[in-house]
Length: 113
View (cartoon, one colour):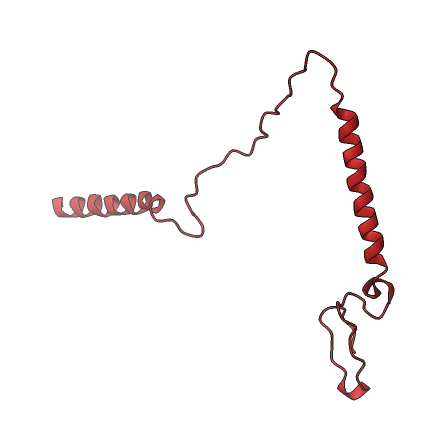
């Protein structure tokens, strides 16, 4: 009888040890990743200066110059044949027109050509 009780306690100890041991062995179900806090960070507020600043006007003109520069660049790009000719349709180079029996399916535009 003592042997049976001892075996039951040993088996119970093995089961308890096996269940508690999962934390040291990460698996795909229990990766043991450290918990991370996803709370918003505190905003950084600027101090108010004692007097008026005149940088706002200069910053405005700088921003407007950058916008105008990007618009000029976009207008220049729009005149290229890649954007004006409908046959390019997402291609950098115009696709070749093959005879119907040799046409291939295009991965870029989804059309046979």
